[in-house]
Length: 210
Image (cartoon, rainbow, N blue to C red):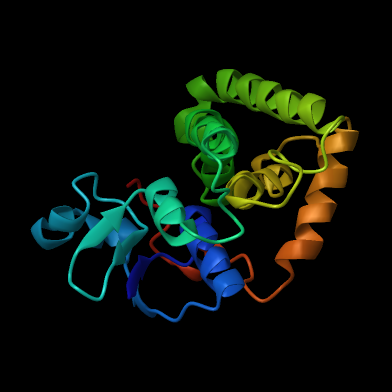
């Protein structure tokens, strides 16, 4: 397999992390997204949206969108239940992350770490309000759950943890969210440090718009 990756992408981190859990080997093809390498005709054949991550299988087929890749790699493993309802509960949180975490916490973190707050000033207040609402939803749910779904660690926890545990880097105060912070620590212990978070600061082009 080959993973088309960008070091600072937490969406790609999700795939790296699951592969580490599963002991899956793959080649890495680094994509300079801020220089436009994900917007070439060849790349768009793999992912029409022009974004990483993309997983190229050994037979040449490709999969885009991190949730699709997680579900594919998680098939038949302990990280994706066999029971239809329990699988749907995992998917519920994957879709929640894609809809709500990406547009708030992930976006704010990107702007904050790449010096783009000023150029997006008109959107900051609404995005921050939305992000705090997302954190409150997670905190409320986790008051009664050790994990997001099915009483065990799953793809749902990997996906939501990726950006949520870095919400402080989005300029958000995490102190009020006690249950969420306990969950972050719990998942952090399971994730370990084998697959570290990497930062936009590695990329001198990250100040550009995508």
